Image (cartoon, rainbow, N blue to C red; front, side):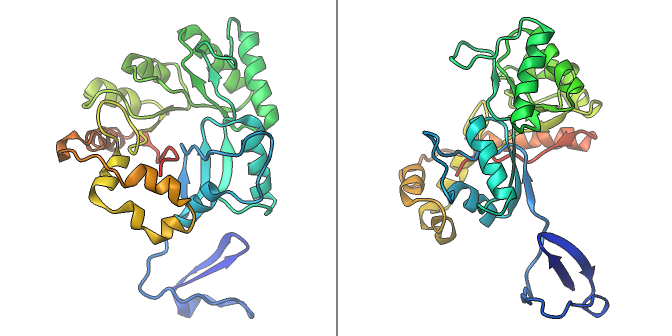
Length: 289
């Protein structure tokens, strides 16, 4: 087979006998390999620079691209930094996947950046601000009152922007996220096994589920599985992009645990139940190593 790529788009694909190669094209022989579409990571915290200084390169962005992520959605990052990086990537000034983000979260807990929602006008103001900065989505996070979450949902719909909440390890809050019509639920559900009520609630709605298997609730996350079973610190491809001090600190002194303690397997089974029932399940790697 032959695949023709022009710019960053596939323009033709098919049997080599049926696809004409443009004159002057660069040929890459991938015999014996498998070509797959770029991965869209809908929950990837990409990190970023600080102190208002933006680098010309980013190892986090480069590493994601090197492992096949061509589009990344960051559901919590610094607004000023992440949208600047998104524009640099889009303009070809910085190497990385296409970047989309919520920017700064609409946080309900007591912090210096708390997003207070006492009225629908408050919700509109928060969502309008994030959209003006470049957000395609907002993250309603730890908004403790259900009516506040509902006002953010309504404001997001009016302003045509996605609303992706996080439940803070509370199943009942996750269930109200679905009932109230959020775009998607971030992170794994915080119980090891789910039953027909929750499966059908997700399956019969249009709400997506992003279980972030590599970091979850209720037991050991998937990230630690790889440290136990592989010598991550010897991965030459990873080390081409990620600083050794980051890799070593996470992987060399590793935790050992019985297979049954890795909760990402149970989380994945629950996600499969939802998908098999007709629900929408997305890939989200959370930005972990």
